[in-house]
Amino acid sequence: MKALIATALLLPGLAFAQATPVGLWKTIDDETKAEKSLVRVTETGGVVSGKIEKLLDPTKQDAKCDKCTDDRKGKPIIGMTIFSGAKQDADEQDTWGDTQILKPEEGKQYRLRLKVIDGGKKLQVRGYFGPFFKTQEWIRLE
Figure 1 (spheres, rainbow, N blue to C red):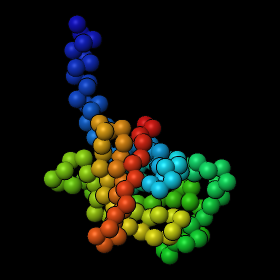
Figure 2: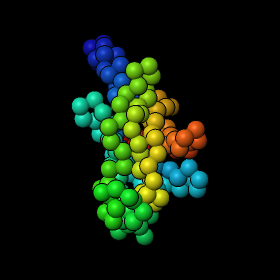
Figure 3: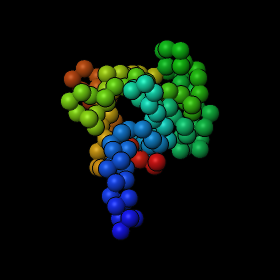
Figure 4: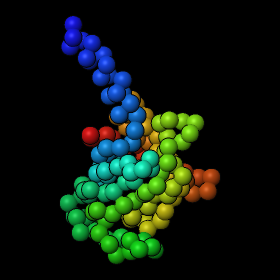
């Protein structure tokens, strides 16, 4: 009986933990549907950031952001922060934004919206360019 009560008390906390983008995510290319990379999303001071931990294509392990136009130009893609400063939406508790995301292979930045979906198993990553957008769904690994 005590184990059942303890489990019942822990479940809301586990559900809340999954309602955040913090964790390790496998990125999926929105066009080819190929697995591309692993991105670690962390939270500091109420804002989240994402950093590429691993490229899944073994031929791209030494890839650099040659098309970047900011201080990331020529730097390795592995270990690169692709977004920072994303804030939780006051109206939608499962949504973060108010920042930009870098697409290293293009060197372009897009306005970003993150939304935790599918019970925390997926992260909808939407990049906006004006009124247009593209969406990827990343898969939670941890």
